[in-house]
Length: 283
Image 1 (cartoon, helix red, strand yellow):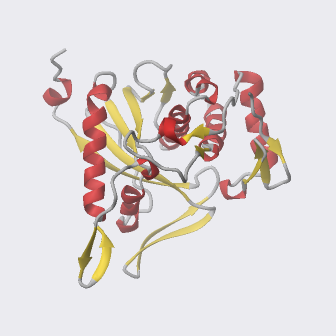
Image 2: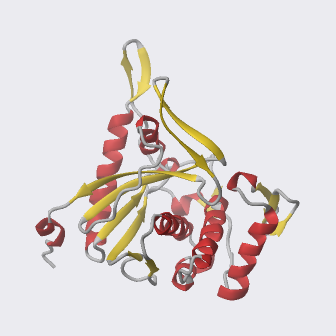
Image 3: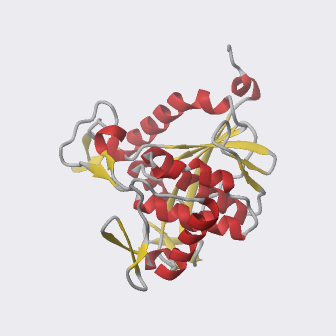
């Protein structure tokens, strides 16, 4: 079955019988619908599924009766908006549209959404962007072939958070969760990435523990320079339009005025590899 976005009013859109508000993204429903129609009419974009059974995309060991289906509407909205903005900036998006494969796989939708937003962010910073087809690296940033890996949302995780007492208060051991999550993500997907790219991005936007690092950054946006043999771990956090202040222990370290389409705060961290280690491959 094919699903279509519809206009409800100036601020709302509808798909598969449910309404969604758009003002937080900085555009109204008519502007969004024009973006959507452009992809449908000129790129044969189709949404064949909006409900994905949780058991098919969950972590293997995780069992839950509370969550029956997942709707990646947020990811679809981001993909539609930023693929259009890329096109308006002169970047060919044919391969980007092809990557989403008619929206029949939850993980592919998340990946395509992440790639569209990341491509826009680095294009905005002055880098040249070229998006590849579905095989090999995802895109080229200046002369570097780059690949994007999306980390599963916390809801898919089987492990429970351990609570420990610090100075008489119960707090989550966030540091251990962050380090453990990073190491697990890198160890399971690094080899695949280095075989097909010069630069790797790991999108931790759906990891609540990693995202908490942004609270302690003195810079509001921390966009890492792309370099060869570099791994960039990052998260994008949506914020509404207006002035954003970064407060740490009551002190203001930075502020930035956010206006559409720049309504995401990016916080990145890099790990650089020795060339011999990056290129080492027994196969």
